[in-house]
Image (cartoon, rainbow, N blue to C red; front, side, top):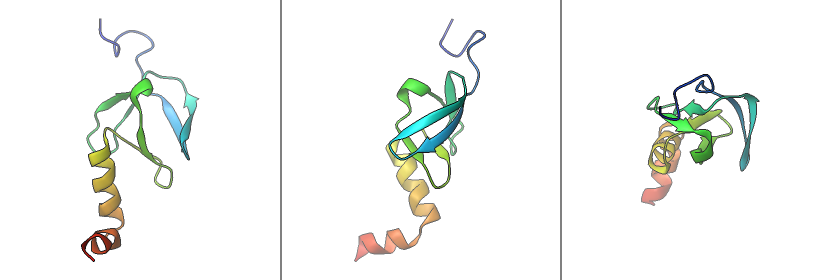
Length: 78
């Protein structure tokens, strides 16, 4: 049985904070807001407080930030 099977294998509900998160409803994982990949809570490292979204990895987080803030792309070219 893998870690997502069994009675405790449901999606957690999370409130994302600066540098931490608060579990509102217990579960084993959250879903990446972009890819819908299951992210085990003990491996959750990337999220947006402003958008209350979780991301599977740094690349996805960065791309989402550029998508929602296009002006950041212009700054990096300057």
